[in-house]
Image 1 (cartoon, rainbow, N blue to C red):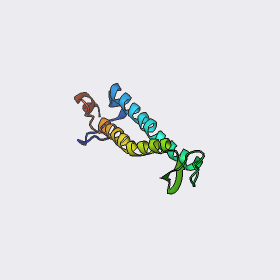
Image 2: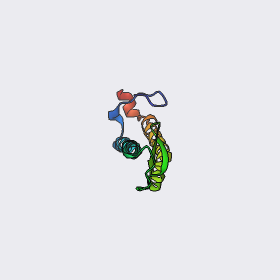
Image 3: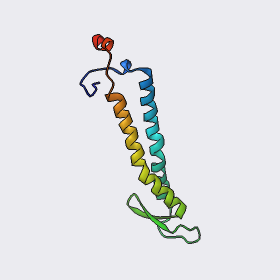
Image 4: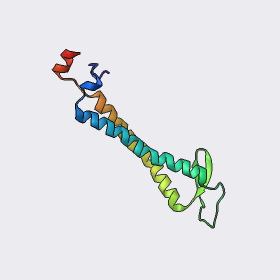
Amino acid sequence: MQNLWRESFEWDHLPAWRKVLIVLLFALFFVVGYPSFGKKIDIYTTAPSKPVLETRQVVPIHVNGYLRYVTEKEAEDYRYWYAMTPTFLGAIILGLFSSVMTYRPGKKEQRAS
């Protein structure tokens, strides 16, 4: 791999703390991204396409191009995750990118390469 300064390095050259950070950020990417995806799929498959007054599913939201009706609490929760997930995932991706790309091998690793 090459870093931002076009210096080559291997995964084995990375310090242990950086490897742990990369693995944790990668796992966090899926942990944060799944609730938003899961909510979309859940609403798309279970919410009615017409308002149902008995269950208070009267708040319209668009999911995967279709109109579905959910309760006020479900709509609020969906809107929060829909708004915040890109911010969280963007920060995680930035952290992953900077963890890998800003590594500069020491003089010892540069001679070994």
